[in-house]
Image (tube, rainbow, N blue to C red):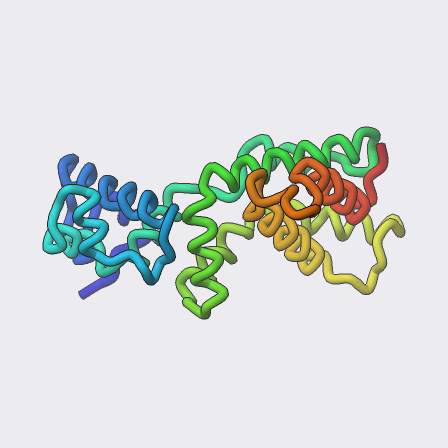
Length: 219
């Protein structure tokens, strides 16, 4: 049996059979129910029966659309992006011009807000990837490509003009930047500022300063 292509996942079940509008609504209900459950529980704690119960359907219906709960999360990831038009505009700017520190802070604000809107599936994706699930590792990597492709040349340009050491790999610099932003986003406004740790705004200020410096920006 041939696998369903990525572009067909919203219109076909995992058997490759086309689903109508009712089937698409049921599929989306299963996705929404899974995301709701994952807000309070880990991926391994959520069962097919749990999802079917929250979606007001049956496990048999669940298996028409998905092989298991991880596949639902992968389907949810198909409908989101880890970038936005505003983020792309900020990344493409001339970082050597004026206002670089301000733009870096706006980039941090935009990224963390986008991540927060999809925090549940991004958090679950990252944890599954770190536990060795190749599917989630691949999803995480693919979703980082737009940022890698835009900022990699910016780091290379900073090297060319002597604002960044030439020994550094530009794409490794972008990867490090993304790890910092993902961790900052995962902490979020609710996790920072506790037990004497810096508040979320202070952490975003520090992240923006680091990004601006790495890109050779000035204010």
